[in-house]
Length: 459
Image (cartoon, rainbow, N blue to C red; front, side, top):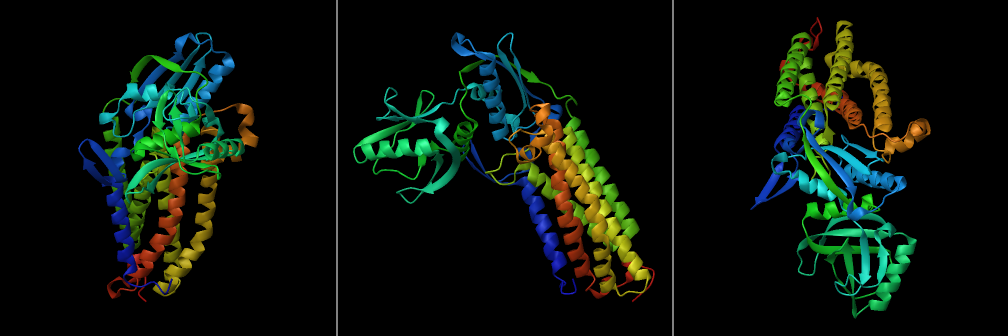
């Protein structure tokens, strides 16, 4: 770290301030009633049922459909996947087999001032059967393939013939779908149309100009990015085996009561300020650097929860999730304390300031790494045991948890997520960023006094 220059401290602080501003306020544009988010702010975090409340809905088979238990299980699975695709992990979906009902509980949408629970419930119950048919908007046309043959759907932006951009949904087919689509487009090339239906609604009816044999397709339409992503999410989640209709929709009050969120936030800010003051009092300049690093850790954790980028859904934050943030901050304080104590020892043993900082961090690394990596293991296990069954960690740990059945206990999943993100950021800020800032400040003449770093002697 001897090569760290004086401006590095200011660069790191500027980056933290910039990320903090973007995280809390975001970047948005407003066109009439339409609000586009380029960078998400904290107002777009989705809060769990325990903090903000949510919706309880009961679904039953529509049109008198006589659903079997396996049909009901399939419907439950699809609804769970639709919720997960929206990054709603604090939800409960269970089946009442005797009365042929699916009961769903999920939290309010982020920015809930305009959230329409009835529309959200209706969307969950839609069959979402995707089909490609020959002909121009002809629902009775010959079916070429269905959504079951789609392996991937994704909302993307493409440039059209007028050199402007438009939101589209790109699809990739499996081998059978690729063959069927290639055969149909070869037959219709130059003179035909293919209509694309979602349930009974035609969402696009493009003309076929040439054979498409690569197993890929673009759905064009009057899409916003959000509507294109919603369509892609439905296709990826799969179609319901039968249509569901909502027989009741109720509002769930937050378990903590109104105003509890603001009280928690105020208490958190006060506690964080006291921690920073304590660090500064004990470790002086090094404590101030640690406080800045902790701010960066918290800010980036919040960014990871909100999604930050518009293409990433907000994570559902619950009370245990907030506990995960607090635990990670505690680990961050511990990492800085261990490092500063090592620096203090080196200074009191007669090392120069630069040498003490370099050796101190090296000696602290193994202890910090050991304590943090064990927490990473705990967070991964929590996310694997209590998260969506198709998540990365659930698949990794399936050989352990397969016997316990599927679980989507979002409150605990939120704890694992915030804890994992916080610990990873602890390595970034508590070790790397704080070391950069401290090494940079040590180059200034006014900050060369070892007492500012906990030492008892001057160089």
